[in-house]
Image (cartoon, rainbow, N blue to C red; front, side, top):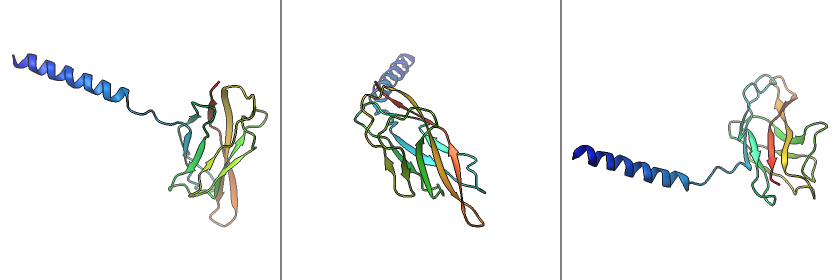
Length: 142
């Protein structure tokens, strides 16, 4: 009898867990967190979350934010050379404590995966600055 009660309890907990997890909100991939830590003019371990940004609605905008651990002067979101760019504006620049939102999509731009680069401006220990380039992706729906 105890084994049957234990089995019913396990099944009940599993069903409740499935229902709860099914209705949890999905992570919004339009908010991109950039952890860019410069060391000697390089960014050895950039963290971009999510690695592939995505909007689920063409009216939605992307937002890029530098984390508090980032020590870059700025992070500029730019099109990759010779690749299509879905936005009217040619670039967007995020600064520490100042996230940046994308602007409107170009009229008639097809839904696709678009390549872009992040140009991070690193301060150098002896003074001056150095640009470091990072290459993630973003998805635009049809």
